Length: 50
Image 1 (cartoon, rainbow, N blue to C red):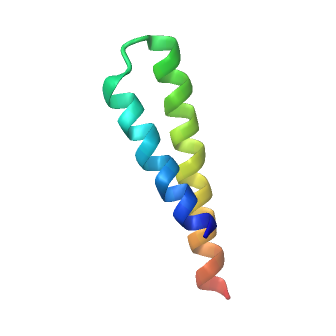
Image 2: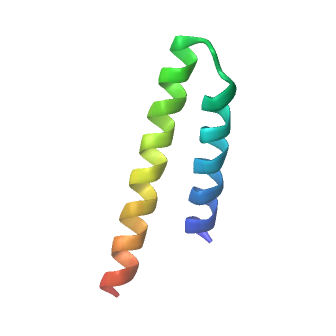
């Protein structure tokens, strides 16, 4: 379930980036997107190790 939430968050952040024009907000969204992508990668790696 956590992976599904991470994927939804990633999709949401990408949609926000597509429409946001303010540079400060874009930077914050990009940071959140990167963190969520890293979290998903970590979860995928951990699942493969099990």
